[in-house]
Image (cartoon, rainbow, N blue to C red):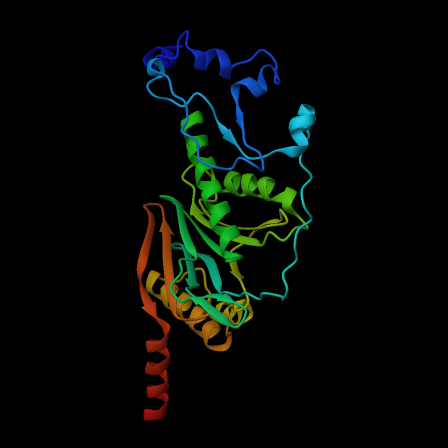
Length: 300
């Protein structure tokens, strides 16, 4: 091949020994095996024609495989999962709703691990592309992993088909990928907040969780602080709201949730998704908002 010609691998000892016709052909002649009695460092043998590439591998002792080479092809038995010594609680407050001016997504920034504040400034709203953001709640590692997988799959779809996958198609794809993990310890709850140019219902709000469930609606709030956020949203959400009113409502819902829920707090992130794409509002510290309101109450 071309790469072999460039690296001078053609007709070399390397090529002859590294590509045997059978899995066990000359396996002990081409590999240096170490044992329990010879664990010292050795200088690897190299070839001048192969650009000083090592001709042999140093392998750890394999006492069970030396006498039975077929054991190399046996599948390994996976060990049983180890349960945590204690229950690690986690919580958050994320929300999203639709109004006449687009889609609003808001979330706090506290990452909790039981009674410990693991990080006060995490990002729970992740942009997927120019017209889609995702709010995440659940395990931080699981949410980050599946958000990256979703970004990759959407980009691959766009490269293959020459068009972007719709929001509903994205939610369906994510649901199919998460469904095999139903009943496991994977904890993912994502809310897709986006705008489709080619569909009738252009503004979309879809909730997808780790058991494969997929729900579409006009307002969602996920996390331990969601009951408090729903109380504010149900009382003030209207379709004919202005952009400023929608932003104030989202801030108020997150603020009330963080005030009552110990697992939520610190700051509030807010995104607004329209036909022109998403825009992010500057992060605000909820502590300053709390003391400002408390001072106003005492002044009265």
